[in-house]
Length: 383
Image (tube, rainbow, N blue to C red; front, side):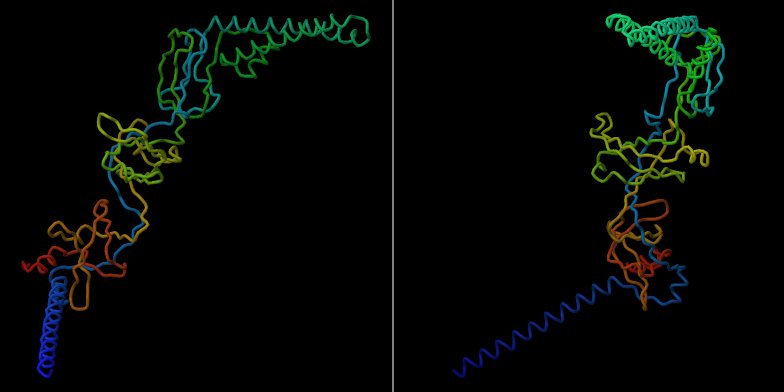
């Protein structure tokens, strides 16, 4: 029994010794790993290397990708002004690029067909006025019981027919381009005119002129293309590998311009020719923006950068603050005795800066210049 107890005690002593050796070894490894991620360096050496310190800048947006885009006009803001009747163009009042107001006279045509429309309208007005006399007379006689009810109904029906004809011809004149004031003037003066005025349907900018003075135009032949530039769209071609990253509401920054837009639509199909997805971004108040900045025009092809809001803690640092090693990215955090090498993830780039994430609080002082020298010191390459 005594021999067994001695063996057990000896075994326990050996086991404890082994555990101590393991703990010491693990501690040594941990110390070595910690040492590998630290750089002991004096302030004098920091100054001699030209290392400049700076703070992490919190970022709320992540640049995802750059993509080509085309500036387009929304379909509901673009109009084709046509000749409502065939005729000869006698005058064009607007040129390419002019700003026009709604109702402004853009062109004048000499149209024989327009004369016929006015004549038919005045004829219908005369017949209605003549009918109204019979209408008033028979209405009074019917109320007194002098005439039969059937006669009154016939008079009333005939009068309504003439009224409808007047309304029909009046609407045809409005379609032809006459305003209510011009129609009222025609009704009072009964003076026919072959001159047809073509008015601007909206306030906007003349984007194209498709006729010249002295040209004979057919009915509905286009004269002008006018657009309201209060809103413009960007049609962006998103590469298929980034389709899953883009969301409605993401911001779009136009290259070399202070103008931004917001993605409002993502296409439902991919272009089979180049495997890109069409995304639409809206530029609000584009008319005022264009007056201030000449960098965006309808029909222009531009480069854009799509930026997405981040829910996680991310930071903006200069590209010079990042060191690469074995495919990984690092920054150098200032400590009391030198620097700590901290691994990071670069999640986006924008100009001379990068957006990073990592085990960071945002209060760290980092080397924003001189990272190459610190990397060489860290890897034991010398400087």
